[in-house]
Image (cartoon, rainbow, N blue to C red):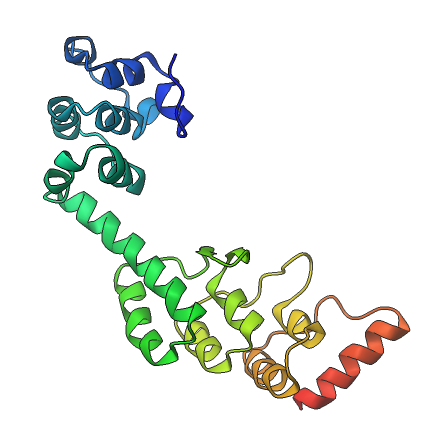
Length: 224
């Protein structure tokens, strides 16, 4: 059995054969169970640099994902241009690129680009509640969480108006409570709190304990 960073591609016999280039064993007249195989066969064929098998898999209905594109990009660049002729791959890349653009737009505070970008997010039916990967050790956050972490009230308003969920709890706390407990500058905390309050977000859970109550109360007064 082979070893690779994406180990799931070799969990089936067909995946091994796709990597080894054994086309006759893969296409033996029996239909491929795509629900079982997923995108692993195509990825294995690309890793093994077997263009003809990859073409046959696509023709046979192989599902596609961004991993297959990156596999070709990293391990089989000669096949990359051929993949880019496939409309499904183009759509996947466009979706992925939009998420990346959203990532950098929020990181750089480029609010002037955000309105246009959110129109594209809506057109592609992307999930604004999907965590985006951020660099500098921040990890994976929803776009709305990242705008609150930065105290970017302009971006916050745009993202809420674009349909982001504002009523979820993060580690048991509402977004408004998280903002009121944050170490943001007072004016940033005030502006973000006002926006959340105007959309009906409540302080959840209610503060308990004297220190908690005093901090939330004082920050609430500032936000009003």
